[in-house]
Length: 81
Image 1 (cartoon, rainbow, N blue to C red):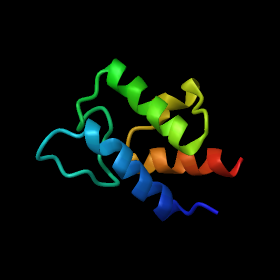
Image 2 (image 1 turned 180 degrees about the vertical axis):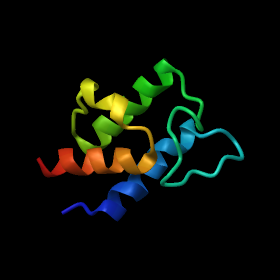
Image 3 (image 1 turned 30 degrees about the horizontal axis):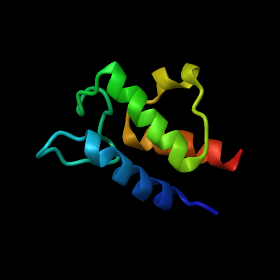
Image 4 (image 1 turned 90 degrees about the vertical axis):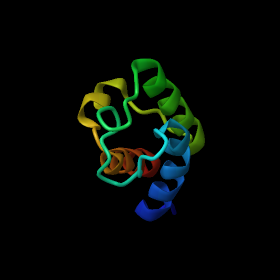
């Protein structure tokens, strides 16, 4: 069973290439505001996450996911489903 800590660790690795140089990635990092992701980068990131965890994140859930931790919770719920 995948734990919250496992998901967080794996997610941090996936997000690393999308992180600006010199920026520290944390659980409370705001995905769009702090990482400065544009819409194409968001979609690329989501595809990597969905492929890695073998899930599909519903597009209507995206507006409520703002931080790394919120994304971890979403992934955790989808993995358990």
